[in-house]
Amino acid sequence: MNRLSHYDEHGEIRMVDVSDKESTSRVAVASGKVCLSETTLHLLRAGGNPKGNPLEIARVAGIMAAKRTSELIPLCHQINLSKVDVRCEFAADGILITAEAKTMSQTGVEMEALTAVSVAALTIYDMCKAVQRDISIGEVRLDAKSGGRSGDYRRE
Image (cartoon, rainbow, N blue to C red):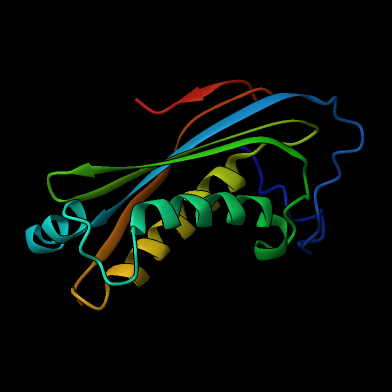
């Protein structure tokens, strides 16, 4: 069984040392969902939200958040991102959010993709809470990653 990488042999927390790892092209894709009522979805589709278009604002918020992941997540490495793409799409019962992050680095971009999805979802929540109080956010997950020593991963 693998051990948690953010703990040393004495059980104390540490930032993982990636200095000996090779810089490689790395990509991560994450997704999540904001569950909204039919009434709220209709309002969004009609462009009737008094605060503006939540989906576009959420896209920008997700990109900005990915760029600041190391400031939000303790022990997360600061990496140069070469791309962050956030997409928000209407679904039958809410908004589906997908984020893709890319880098050429010694460590992966999973946290950046997950942070982008999470903050985009929170932004939609904030923008829609005036018209719906029972909004829920869920299903935030890593869908795929490539690059690095641990190899590729794709959720089935």
